[in-house]
Image 1 (cartoon, one colour):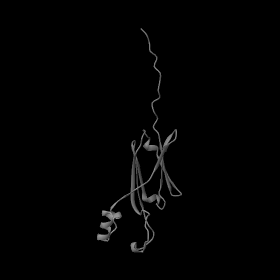
Image 2 (cartoon, helix red, strand yellow; image 1 turned 90 degrees about the vertical axis):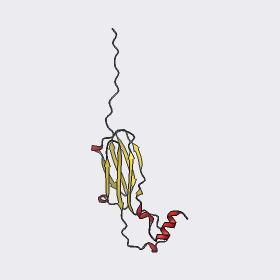
Image 3 (cartoon, rainbow, N blue to C red; image 1 turned 180 degrees about the vertical axis):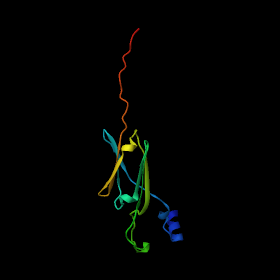
Image 4 (spheres, rainbow, N blue to C red; image 1 turned 180 degrees about the horizontal axis):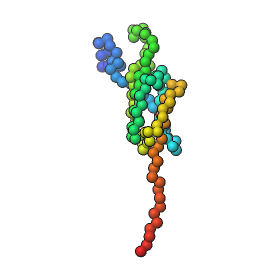
Length: 128
């Protein structure tokens, strides 16, 4: 039994209520964008806040249970209900102003266009 288990038993409370859950994400790139996907089933778009700047994406939200089941009635309670957040440092320069987010079938997809990079050019060396 861990200390947290002891705290829960002694206080009779739920120690998870004091903590914010961390959201699992997948991040990949296409030639034009960085894509972030996160499974957030049961979360309404109105319960999400997404901030994007040139370096960091932060996803905050709240998963609400619709049940009024007393805690003592559960045999197992593995699903996380409550506030969650996740910040991710982008590995490349991004265009925060053109970012978009969509929620479909319980999957949040954030599309962040890459910034235009300065093109490499060849410089001709002139002799004297």
